Length: 304
Ligand code: R5P
Image (cartoon, rainbow, N blue to C red; front, side):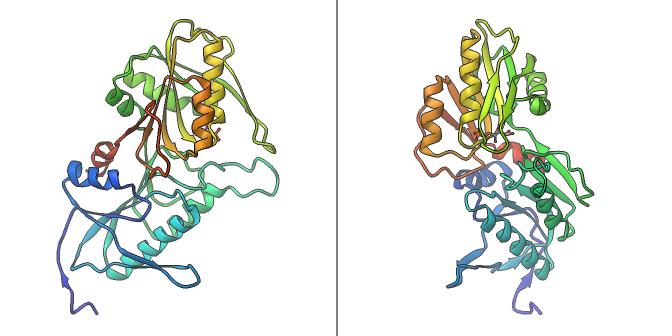
């Protein structure tokens, strides 16, 4: 069937789909020392996506990387199209790496009649018979369904904080449910950890944060979270901590889905510094108090 194509045993190729930020692709080439390939992509007149792998040498196996923001729906479909095309070429997919997983925040039926959207995402991936999926700080790391593949979730905050060389006394989660992340980061850094009390109105989306009885007076505190979107969670947490007497409040957040409004809200909170990972191609210019940390090294270690 592929008589015109030489079938080569090319190992160690990373297929980067269109959501992969440029800096991460460069990082993969530099840190993993492997070939990075992006398939040809275009849109039909009705805006459906078309893609094609026009390998000169068809690899035996590849890792496939996608980040599902912006245009979440398109990025999910692009991943499904790529996996189907690779299967048609007989290429083994050793890992799928999801930098930012869309639809992962809705992990419960908060209101009757809602979908568990992360379940729909995982069930879709399951259809491709994958062995291993690596997520970068996915909102719901512990699947509650039989997903049929091995899921490895990377928490990059300790690496991000070490790269930024910040002096931290206390690591905080913005809510109790995210304590596992704060605990891991605090243990890596050999400092203490705790959580803030967060209440979100499920209808209006309004957030309230309480620093409760935390002893933060004079301390340098870092809030660790997976996502910034509107910035309301982080801004309220920062304000509550300064009210409670914190010295410097930093944040390390993996995925920054930020707009200029988000930056304004965060800037008003008085945050000292915000570290974000390069899981998403930023579309606006970021102020100097936001530092983007390249996490390609962490991902290459997981791929090896
Ligand atoms: C929520 O559970 C997440 O971990 C983030 O805290 C949340 O998505 C942040 O959203 P926003 O920036 O809109 O407050």
